[in-house]
Amino acid sequence: MGTDPYYPMVGFYFSVQIDGIFNSVDSKFKEVSGITMEIENGQTVKEGGENGAVHELPGRTKYSDLVLKRGLLKPNTELTDWCMSFFNNDFSKPLQTKDIYVQLLNDQGEPVFTWLFKSAHPKKMEISGFNSTGSGDAGIVVETITLKYETFSIV
Image (cartoon, rainbow, N blue to C red):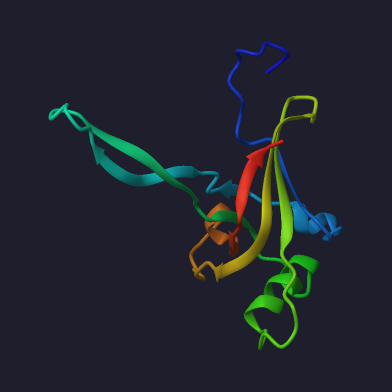
């Protein structure tokens, strides 16, 4: 990787930080995906006087879900407790969203890119299936946490 700005980044050296969650175990993930934004189709406008021209105006920006995957940990980590506060809530008390930072790191462990996901909240938690013949990665139970957020930016 070095200091050459034209050297492509590797995807295996990254970190995840979640505001208000300080347990280092809760920042270790094997995979992060869903860093996607897309502009929806907006309004189509036919140009007056120019019958062959049709203009597509951009619509709103939409964002995909942020997906975090890790090996399943024993219950009651801070992250799991926060997620369960959404799934088990009767909405009689306010829910707390959190900002999430995903950093792509260089070979010295310094952030090169940082994505900030504002006001994230859990949408889905999934535990992978169990397989009695699994070994290696296939033998690890994977917890997948899917998050919705308002917007993301590169900071």
